[in-house]
Image (cartoon, rainbow over all chains, first blue to last red; front, side, top):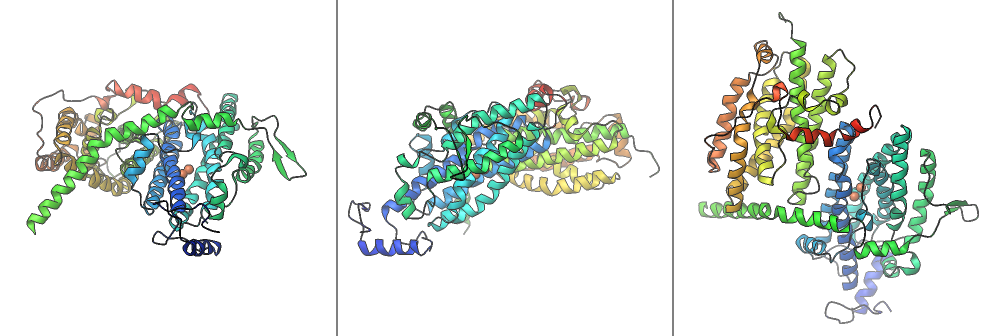
Length: 326
Length: 255
Ligand SMILES: [Fe+2]
Ligand SMILES: [Fe+2]
């Protein structure tokens, strides 16, 4: 029964006994490690999900990187710089973890730059004001934490371990974002307005970060069985909303959803319908900043080509000299 | 101490230290998210963070020395370019990676030698700050020196870019050692480093590496000067316009 529709790289059915053993291990909450046998589809799912995650960290540097040179105080500048640097570090760990599945970082980078690979849709929105730094830390890193905390228990060992390390930093990111919002919300009217506009911009896209609704989610069931995913998209989204609404109230800001209200019966907040068409458009490449974000990565890659080449050539020359001397 | 320190001169010198670190850090921060590869993105950001941290410390020393109620942030965000005291080299645009690297190397050699000397300053707060910064700039120097060598002794393209960077940057370096009457007084009192002695040391160290890297020092060019007196290039105004935007557009706010 485990082999249902699962085939290996050559299109052969995966061996039933190995599959059964694999699933039993997962059910016992044991980690799958790089050298362990795993079905091709598990490997592929992880490569897709992990590389998308790594790409998101890297592209995610850009919307906030946009304000580093304009941060309003020395402290804010250093905190933001450290935060964006963390994201690059996250990208690095996750790329390394993905490499344990038998793909190279070069290959993954190539997929990002050619538009074959996806990254989180949220980073295709612009950050026109300083308050967006607050809204992103608070909401986007907040949503990332909701997604990533369960991943600390993901069945694939290297991914789970990288998430443990990353989640610690994400909570610092979320706090610094909320703190920016707090200061703005207590500030002058102009600052409050700035904060409200940023919340208006970021709210719906951050709900979309949890992916399509469970009704339309294609990869969910198998990922749950493999314990790559622990909660459904809608469950995580609801958790996020329930945690965030009181925070917005505490700030004195208004969440831009007239249908948002507490439901005594369910013990959750009801919310308005998400504009799924917008999400699909952004995923397809038609968000406000898709082209700019990708181009920024392409430019960095192309402008860095000669540097990478030089480093390699130098290393070879050193090795040659070393060999001659020996 | 027998002689009274000239506070105004020391204040100006602390601003020179702080402004230099801040402008260097600000330029490096422009690489964040755009580095030639991820590891380098992270490394450049590290250096930038250290430098902005140094700037903050030196601004705080300046604040402590002054009677008015200006804060470190006021000094960074509310002074115009003619009030900035950094040498022009630190405000130059980031350029390509060769330019960034060589500029960083020049400044790193200078900073290591300078902070070593300032560690012995008779003004204790400055001596302590220099000791702290020294540990970090030593690490920066290791990194930038390795990159200068790596880029210079590799591909033809990298070598050409490094030579061009050297041609463009070389004559900005003498300004690092510039003094005026007030600074000379502080030097005599042992409050700040003997910049003339540093100039010799700096030239020795830098020229040794350039030679090993087969780079040629250009024969002539405009020798930069003016930063100490608040006379700057066109670049600083744009940097400040960007950096100070929020503080200027929304005066008196908390952030
Ligand atoms: Fe992250
Ligand atoms: Fe983050």
